[in-house]
Amino acid sequence: MLRNVAILLTGAVLALSSQLSHAQQDMSPLKPSPGSHVSLFEFADLECPMCARQNPVLKDASAKYHVPWIRHDFPLQMHVWSFQAAVNARWFDTQPKKLGNDYRDAVFASQSSIETKDDLRSFTDKFAQQHGVALPFVLDPQGKLEAEVKADYALGVRLGVHQTPTVWIVTDRSGGAAPYTEVTDFNKLYTALDQAVAQTGHGKK
Image 1: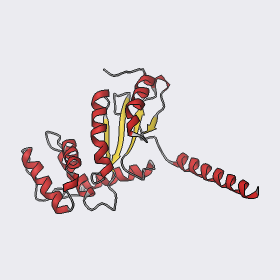
Image 2: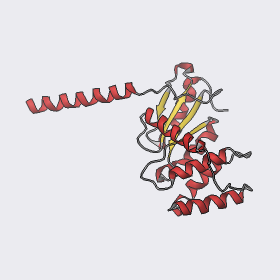
Image 3: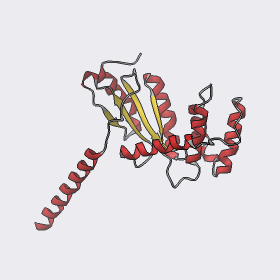
Image 4: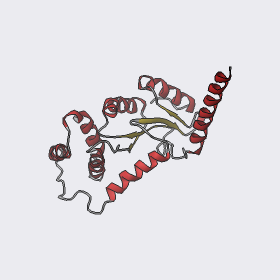
């Protein structure tokens, strides 16, 4: 009897601790893109196999539902080239054709063939050539792009991100919609998006 009570108390303490931890997190950055009622808000690691698997799912969902896809970097320390890949993507973001997301998609699609930083450099050189862009000898001389990636990582920590991909469906709360819902099952992503757009009263166009 006492053992059962102890187990129940332990469970209650853990649940309360989890609630308090969540309450202490500042979730205010989880907002849709300006002018949008619903957005996908993602933290990803370009070397993460699960991120590569879900990347086309998110891309298709964004296109089908006409919702912005807000992509953030969360390079994990155990991955040898993910941080540099994130910096590379930031550089392509600065180009006139805005190739950053194309680069991210290409990295995910070719992820299994990139094992080292040298592999990544060769892949990046080829990608730049294919898109008519000349890579500078020093990609980020002032460290601004690295700072942006680190700022994204810090934001993820602030939001309680501990794995990749972490994705939320965020809304502007119109129609009484929940401000954000974490996607824990990508097989149910479309169902969750259906609910979000219905709650905001702004369906697919």
